[in-house]
Length: 140
Figure: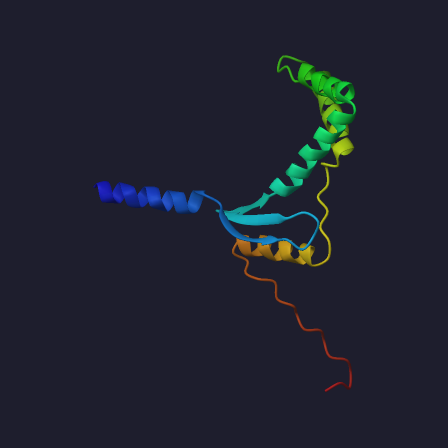
């Protein structure tokens, strides 16, 4: 009986936990991809690390400005606020993320193809295979 429960638990762990399948390291930001049942997980820790560094740099340069923005966001995050306050909070968060460059993750060149391959393989679709072009008339 205990062995059966242990096997179920092991099966749960192997299916529920993300399984790292690879990474794309050729661009300015590292991106790792893990597979999970029915999907994929993008690990953006390197990107978020850079955002926090930018936020810390801006705080060092002007602590009052960043501090005031964060206080406003916190004040508008009260769950009893109306929807107008939520929209204002979301706008302020968007502005802050734009300020620190956190709304976009840029991928370049081979990194785009690598991330696409990893995402496709994470869902069991296999690897990307190039389809040969049609021959031109008269070519042999």
